[in-house]
Image (cartoon, rainbow, N blue to C red; front, side, top):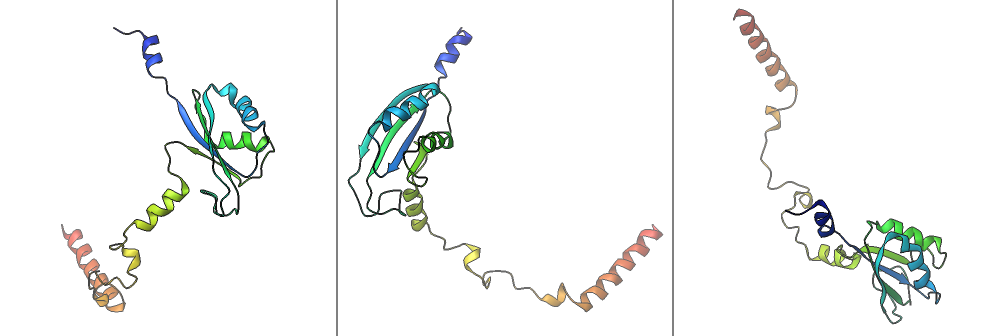
Length: 165
């Protein structure tokens, strides 16, 4: 039978993130960010790649003519993307909007946009504002003065029958 300590060591989770930063970075950026995140139990911190300058950088469609630096961060301690973004913001090395942090398992913005373009909405009710496939209803049967008079007659009959019983 396993001990509780064995179960704990087997259930160790890791949390991985991709940090993308557009534009020029100071030379000590990687070391500074690693030092800031060091108390979160960093298992891996490495710069994966730097893309060449492109007119519209990947994941930064609002920016023009920038290179994008990508870092892989893996921690033992559970972190959120907001915490890492806050650390980058406090470093004062780049402006908000020039960096994005994503969980490694989550899709990128570009992937989400292209997935939305490929989706088929043929049968969606919201695209049929005339409701052509809906049931044909006679409105006199459910609305208006005649309906209200008939409803009150039926209601009074049923209340009289209820009192007799």
